[in-house]
Image 1 (spheres, rainbow, N blue to C red):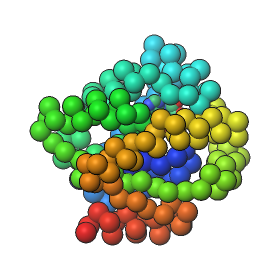
Image 2 (cartoon, helix red, strand yellow):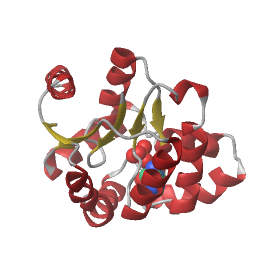
Image 3 (cartoon, helix red, strand yellow):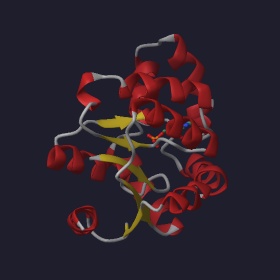
Length: 189
Ligand code: AMP
C-alpha cells in the first residue's frame, strides 16, 4: 500500500499514519519527524531547518525532496509506505510524481483528513500542554502561521490529486478510532 496522508497541522496525520503502519506493515515517512531528529542531532540540515520550522514556515522543497527520495530508496519502503507531511507544495508533488515514475510505482490513495480550524487550535493547545512545550512550533501564533501556509500552499494539492483520481476524504473531527475505521473502509473498497 502506497499512501499519502494529508490534512492541516494538528489534524491527526501522525496518529493515523502510525495506525496504518501497523495495519499494513509499512513504514511512516514523516518529513517533520526526520527534520526534528536532524535538529536534535544538530546536522547541517537540522541547523538550516530549525528557525524555519520554529516560525511555522516551510523548509525548502529541495531539502524535503532529498529526504523523501532517500527514504523511498530504503529497503523498508519497497512494499509500501505512508508519506506523512509530504508533499506540502505543488513543486513537491511534481517531484514525487517523478520519483515514483522512475521507480515504476504509483500511489494507491491520498487520504485527506478534514477538520475545522478552531478545533485544530484547541487540539494544538492540548498537545502543547501535554508535551510540556517539547515542540517549538506548537503554540497558537505559530499554528496560525502553519494553518495559513497549509491553506495557501498545501490545500491546492487536493485538487492536484483529485485530477489523478485517488483522493479519499475522511471526517477528521471524529474520534481516533472512528477516523481510523473510516480510512480502513475507504482503502479496502
Ligand atoms: P509536521 O511534523 O509534518 O507538522 O512538520 C513540522 C514542520 O516541518 C513544518 O511546519 C515545516 O516547517 C517542516 N516540514 C515538514 N514537512 C515539510 C515539507 N514536506 N515541506 C516543507 N517543510 C516541511
